[in-house]
Image (cartoon, rainbow, N blue to C red):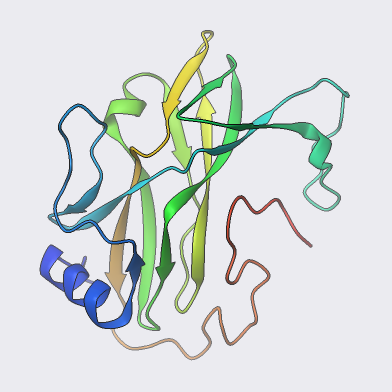
Length: 184
């Protein structure tokens, strides 16, 4: 299962709109880097955030999720409270080919500050803006910058296309835009 290189990612972005908007080279001047890298694509977080709160003492239940567990914020930065988390989404919209599985890794700049990014794999033939979970593991407030790099996606090619893709299963998060909360 090879990791796909920059020239393949560029080709797929041009030929099948795999990533839109696509940034051809890695941008780094004064920002947390984003765009095409050697063996991946560094995505940006949007300026829409859902910050976890315990104001209503809600119970976190993935089968009956209460949207009141979050407060909404929009802007160029997001402050995540200590030992808490926020959700955002990528600026980019992804269309994953049938023979590709995408894995997400956090950016080292954030990781070195105790800020962890979690995204589940992007399955073959899934498409949408990616919901990103950002955890602040520190006892201090943490600042996240909208429009800058938040994570890197690695594209792994299977030995053959899968028999059943995410699209074939009519997955519940297909075509999402913005932050998608847990669904049953």
